[in-house]
Image 1 (cartoon, rainbow, N blue to C red):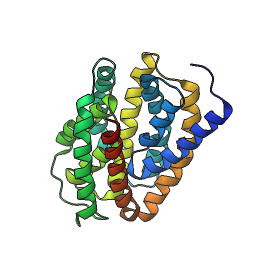
Image 2: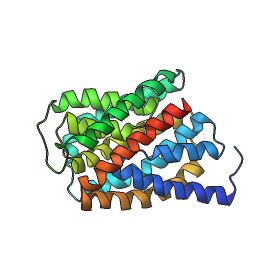
Image 3: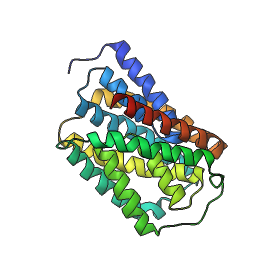
Length: 251
């Protein structure tokens, strides 16, 4: 594609900052970044690929912050990370050959359901709850399943990971947000690898937006560590509803 005008590049970098901030707290940064990339003139597959590049900067920054501050122990997620990588790699390969129209109808229903649960359940907060799945079963169901979804389609991935941690692993919202960033980083890197091998990544744009992602994710992850469920719960609801409306109105 032709080189972007400086003002367009600056706007995309600013979008990266905002997307990184939102994504570090509740996921859904792609809801801002992907339309911006399409608006800038990238074809759909290149937009998806470049979105994975810029998003990797944000999820890496947030993951580093959460691990450094002791919000999560990464060794306990090694199995889920491996399954997430496999799922995302498979989904990325599949999306280049298959059509995902049916997901436009299914995903909004699931996200609205999660939004209502996050909004009205009094059990979700600062305390852990009872684990419902073993780490191995969690890795297979959430890591592989949501990882494949992220590589294949993507919208709402952060909400699906967070819901898995809360509902199935029994984690509180702050800890679930930290775990979500680690698995989301894994799926981003797996997708990026296979998109890059296919020559779909626009590196100059993705790296520029990635710098914005670093700034936004740094701020967002510190807000989560300081305020916990008070800030995560409402943003999870807002992001879930926003992604659902986008899919319903554009599907």
